[in-house]
Amino acid sequence: MVKLRLLKATPALVLFILAPTIGELLSGSSPPLEFFNPISFLLLTSLYGSGAIIMREAKVRWHKDYRSLLLLGCAYGILEEGLMVKSFFDPMWMDLGRLGVYGRFADVNWVWAEMLTIYHAAVSITIPIALAELRFPEKREESWVTTRHLKLLIALLAGVTVFGFFALTQYRPPPLQFALTIAVMALFIYAARRIQPRDASAYAGRLSKSRHIFAVAAFGSFAFFLLFYAGPELVGSPPVLMLLGLALVLGLERFFSRYDWWGPRSAPARLAAASGGLTFIIFVAFLLETRMLGMSIVGLATVVGLVLLGRRIHRESWVKIISP
Image (cartoon, rainbow, N blue to C red; front, side, top):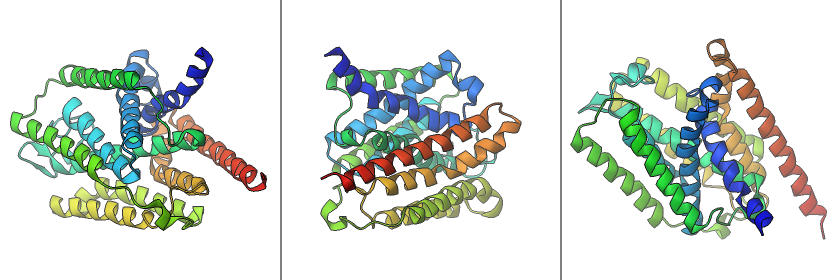
């Protein structure tokens, strides 16, 4: 019985570690020497790992699809950046750079807030969940934690959020903006709960070639980051930049929504989409080696891991084809 429970917990444990590894380590937000510090590692896994498992459990228990997961990912991004570290409001937040001035209005860093909400929805939540489910395809539709453990994870996420609010910086957001942020986060959760999943039968067998999926996802990855990092120097109006960012995301969603992401043959396409979505931060990881020791190893390990996962999926696909 103990062994069976341990095996059942394995997918949740993988996701618990994978989410902060992608969201913080691979992105360079927490380079290796910082990420593997025991205290930092505990905080980051409690934050990202708990968030990813909670959002996946909501998606599975509500019987929703990837659109609901993306909305839940937006709620997570608001929780982390708006409520915990307060970077949505703090003009001196260490990672802001030009975005501490560009797009700041009514004590809110609007362009930064949009970028980080989208980033966390895709990179910190959706992609790690997709990769974990690809690693454990037989458990894709199952809950990975019990209700009791889910409540503990919610308490852990709430605890680390409160800790971060008081301990990370002395900045305190204006009460009205902070309250509205909580309301927006709640709206994303409500929308995720209410949105109806697409009819899987309408898309059955409608698959694109994996290399096309990868190319579009990679293009979206580069376009997204270049838009928000170079945009302040090229686009004079912050609202226009925000509209361009929203248009890019909606365009990608429209493209990907045409294909079958549910069927037994969709695994290569799902891996291609996740891998493509990581291309920019993998590329940047190698560039960061000059000032962050070990980042090239992180980038290389990510590429190797994706290749090995692809080979596993390919092997399992052939077993299904030749099995009677």
